[in-house]
Image 1 (cartoon, rainbow, N blue to C red):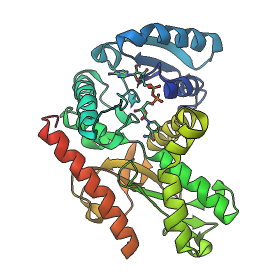
Image 2: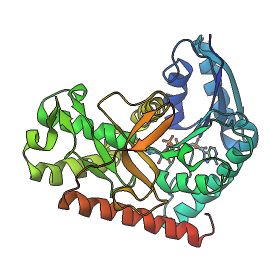
Image 3: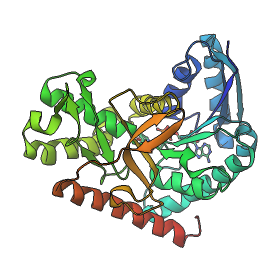
Length: 328
Ligand code: NAI
């Protein structure tokens, strides 16, 4: 057995947590030879429910689950964490404006950024799933000055996976036939799923589909509206697929994207593709050894340019709001 890895998960008693923890504990991230020490953070009133989840984790008797620690103190739970998956967030309640939502979550991600800065392991990687994910990640990053900015990312892998599924259906292929899918921008209604660089069996996906109207009027609204469609059909949110995407994103970040492919990940912008520097923007990235690089040199057509500009304008607005609130 290898040295145990400490994985911190916030919002661990929530819906996504209930799908996520069992997969991490059973080796989905680090394989059968690496023990995992789970460190689970919740707010105080949810700790009793979390104790129930811990009983179930014990009852699974996963050989890869070394230990589980729970608590409501970020400084304690993040201590020595090699990977922190920030899933817990404050949902929008009735009458809440977007700026109220940013402020409520700002308080959470300011405190968690500071705690990570103080106590996480030197090699920590931090993935933010809790919404508004991009700006929550920006807030956490800005409050953790000693952790390199490249160690923070926000989840757009669910959107990426949703776009793969829609394209596979349209082209009558399997998702395994598709590579180089890209989600640009914000994990919100303005996100831009881009298939102009995607490939189906090595051929350009937009050419294979040959249907611009499908891209504009079907693919993009279906992917960006998928979360709402699932809530309407199921009566609750897309927790299992969000957990699967959280695993996929962390797995590729830590173990590398496959040769000849890339993943979508919201990372701090260096100005690539005209995105304002410092925004936490989803890009096509390749990863290796726990580090990511933005794929360079892609040609951006006029349609894509408008879509990328719109979603990054929204990110810039969110940054302005949280700057005004003194959160970054
Ligand atoms: P949920 O409401 O079932 O669970 C959230 C949990 O977070 C609750 O147990 C709550 O007590 C906890 N929590 C709240 N504040 C906390 C804090 N300060 N520290 C630790 N825990 C805290 O929600 P669910 O379905 O698990 O979703 C979690 C988040 O993920 C939501 O913000 C949701 O919008 C987001 N999400 C993001 C997706 C993405 O693709 N980026 C996709 C789907 C959901």
